[in-house]
Image (cartoon, rainbow, N blue to C red; front, top):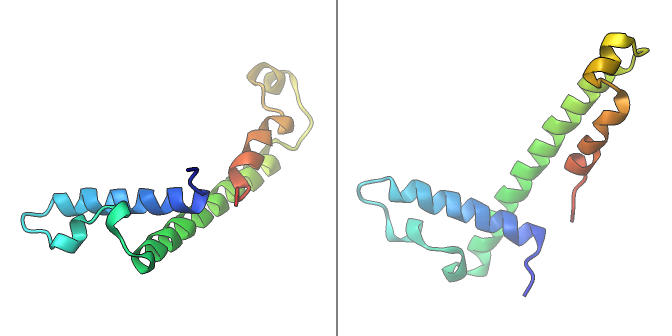
Length: 101
């Protein structure tokens, strides 16, 4: 069965949480509950956290793309061509900014 992007993000949040919980000398048993054992409400919380982190990262990447586009959107000179600094090289940002949902 294929997982949705949303579920993958939720699983990642849960994995990070459980890893954090294992670092404590006396973690509460609920802290160590894996994704498959969570009820729907707890899964929803982890998926929402994952979505919020992904949205913040997309915004950070969007801001970087805007910054570098402004920096690089001047006529290319010989040094730029040598370094490969062309605005069309920003196309990888488009894939990172898009929300795959």
